[in-house]
Image (cartoon, rainbow, N blue to C red):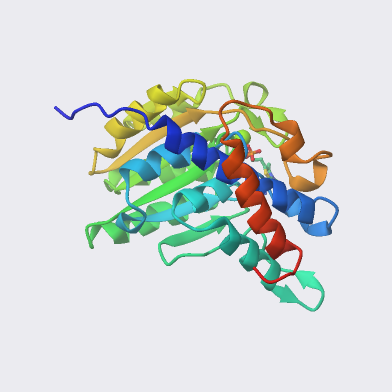
Length: 275
Ligand SMILES: Cc1ncc(C[n+]2csc(CCOP(=O)(O)OP(=O)(O)O)c2C)c(N)n1
Ligand SMILES: [Mg+2]
């Protein structure tokens, strides 16, 4: 039997502080630009990336994301200033391009803005990855468990024993529509329908999610699913958020010092000064 590991609370608070600092600097840069409509903050979604990358090394998998994934990049070791540089340097004429598509490492195979589109791509990649002894982590929102392609992908993943970990960030909202009003079955029931091992946890109980992740990531054959309940902090996209994340959050679960440090570093990059 695998030994339980203790949840590294201090690392988690530091990580959340880093995400907060980055999102605050990004909000200042993007909230009143057209690009702000296509940029989605990870605040409130930090636990799944923190736990999954604790148990799966970045290079040991191929990673596939939906559009709300800044925290995943930071958990995978990408420095916040690197993300800021990438966003501000990709320009065609006066227009910033692709702030939602940050393919910053070779092991990131998809950052998709079409709901559920990354799921079949990730399953196909997992079939190829199996031949080289790797697996795929596919991150999606609860709203992506509605389209038909999601069900087709689960079906094939189980039939073909694709080595894939589905991670659902279940914030109970598809943009601003509550999950309960658009889906009869629960997310867990959808995975169970295909016999996919599924574990769940709530961000309010990080130890529970950490333990579920440990158990689930130990399964190396075939598909498995981790569903993490979380609460989005702020609006769907940065342009719809009227105040800075730094003023919104006064929370013991964020390392404030780390947030201020990261915020300062990223502000320099976003301001166009050398950084
Ligand atoms: C195929 C497709 N249909 C509709 C949209 C518009 N859309 C953007 S985000 C979103 C909701 C997705 O819900 P979820 O995956 O839970 O993400 P969250 O709202 O929590 O960020 C929708 C319907 C889209 N991007 N792609
Ligand atoms: Mg959602």
